[in-house]
Image 1 (cartoon, helix red, strand yellow):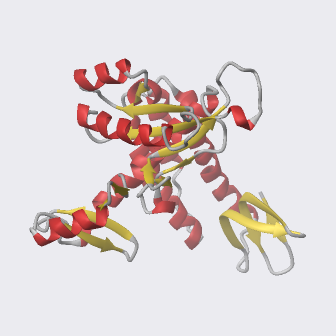
Image 2 (cartoon, rainbow, N blue to C red):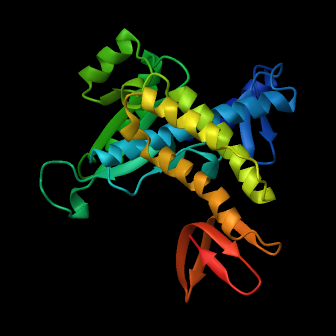
Amino acid sequence: MIVSAHAVKVENILNDLNYLKIAEKKIYKGKYEFVCYPSIFEDERQFEQELDRLESSTILLKLLLYWLKRVNIINSDYVFKGPGNNFLGIRKNDIYWDGWAYTNTIGLGTKDKKFQTIVVIDFCSKDKYEEYDFEGFKNRVEKIIFSVKNEPRKVLPIIFAYDFSPTALKNIKYNNYMCFNIGSILGKNSLEIVNGYKSLKDEVEKNIEEMSDENYTQKIEDNLGKIDKSDVSDNYENLKGHFFEYLMFPVIREIYNERDARICHNFKGSINGDNFECDYHVDMKKRGYLF
C-alpha cells in the first residue's frame, strides 16, 4: 500500500469510495482497520474470522523469514507485518511492506554495514500471485531504489506465494526478482500446521492463565505429527520449540503446585537495569524461579 504518491492519499481514495458507497473503513476492537464492502462484516464473527486469518498469515510469514535467516539470505534484524502494527505492515519511506530486512550476502565477504543490501518482502498467502500484484510491488521497490540522489540503492526484492500466474512469474524473472513457493519451503500442509498451532496456542495460554490441569499432550503430539508429514520439519524449529515450552507447563505446575504460586509464560523482566526474557516465571511468596 502506498500512503502518498503524486499528491493522492489513500485516505482521500477511501473517502471517495465511502461517498460512492463502494467501500468503507471500519474499526474493530478499537485498533484494527478493515476496508470492506458495506454489506459484509456486519457482525463481529466475520471480523473475528478475518482477524484469525491475518494472525495465521503472520505465523507463516515469521516462519518464512526465519528460513531466510537460517539459509543466510537475510540478517537477524528483520521486521514484518503483524499484530504489532495492526497488520498494516512495516512503514518505510511512506510505503508499507510485508517484511523488511537487510543482507550482507553479496559476495564481498565483509560485515561492514555500508555494504548491506535492503531486503523487501511481498507475501501472498491467500490467492494466486497475479501480474497486478507484481506491478504494484515493482512500483514500490523502484521508489526505494531511486529514493536517493547520488546513486540507486541496493534492494533485494523477495516474493512468497503458494502459486504464481504464468504472466506474473514471467515478469518476476524478467526483472530479476527472487520468488519462492511457500509450499516448497513449509510443505503442502503448512496452513493446516499453522492453524493447528494457533488453535492450540490460544488454548494452552488460557490454561496457563487459569492454572488449569487440562491435559493437552495428545494435541501437541498430533500437531508434531503434522509437522513430520510436511517432510520439511527442520523449517518448523520455532513452532517445535513452542510446543516444548507448552509441555513444560504441566511439569512446572506439578512441582510448584502451591496455592500462592503464580506461573507466567513468556515473562519479561529486568535485573539491575538489564532486561531479560524467559519461558516461565514462577512467582511465590518467599521466592521466585525462572525457566
